[in-house]
Image 1 (cartoon, rainbow, N blue to C red):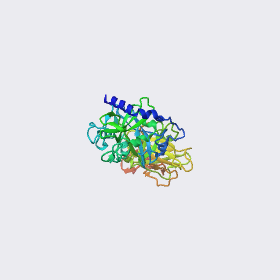
Image 2 (cartoon, rainbow, N blue to C red):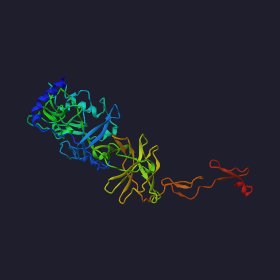
Image 3 (cartoon, helix red, strand yellow):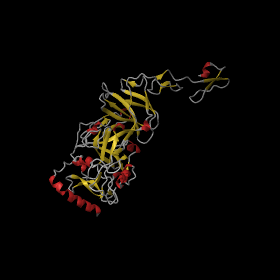
Image 4 (cartoon, rainbow, N blue to C red):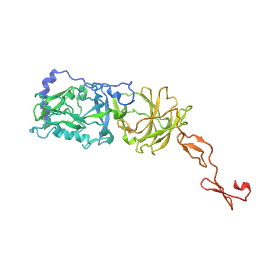
Length: 456
């Protein structure tokens, strides 16, 4: 009932504004088949940042069902765009909808308190932290490493109530918050959003972190019931009203190795022929491959016989790969402009060390480079984790890694498979007595006094 009353009040407060304003343009459908489906780094996320046609990221998931993933809007990129939330070296994202459908949350439980609309001590901050720490009933990270690339933000305090001297639409009232992982938008940040992003489709009210007109009021966003427009209500509503909680956060762009199409962005063949040409993304939805510190020990070794120029096959020895579910030795061919031309998951990892061969025939052009890495590939709309890229040179001059000859195999390079010499002869033991034929597991014996053919 409280929530219904608040929405009726909000409608009355905004009716005059709604009649005179031009409705915001709804989010435009965006498709650009010319955008590669996989890129090194994050540059594709800067396209239309915080505008109609902005990019979307799948990041995190629901607890139940785990197959349901979470979508975010890119509202800031490396300080670019017109949203005051955008900062250098960070990607600022806003959750598409209200994560929980529980009927909303209160900003503060008692609107009569003088600190009711102070974000640093309000109930709403604790609720936002529940999402960040994945202790809410329906929030789950795909992996704790996802949470690890979130850069905590300082929310500047010292603001005043709306309409009072010293009011700042981007400051919170009271003390600053120094370590916000997830946070709510300010009035200024919400007002800067394109209309299609400010709208909600699973709710029509959501809290902002800015104070309202009085100590017992906080600002919020309100969408009309036909979803034609959304307005920022700066004078606010009672803090004990129930509204939605819509988190935002900052990602460390330098921790992201690849950005790929959320669906079908990392298509692969199998085995030595895994390298597959990278196509184009059919929409503006992406997933991330992030740097995984647990794979820092991954390395490769090559030698002078690693590359066969006639067949295009290149063989290498890897070590330090992480053995876990969905762990692969993967490869990519990059052009001289760092564009990814081919990608493939060459071998699933079953041991920390092993030998892999990749077929590059017809795929390498002048200036191209071949890289390999150890990654955990988790499928569409789900974050992947990978080591740094290791360049695999096609004209190698390193030393062979020889395995000593045996009675069945000659001296053999463990990297490229090249052999040298012959298998060792059997080892005979001279004794008096009956001759024993040699085998690979038993030493042969011969009689000293026997005829020469007795030892054969």
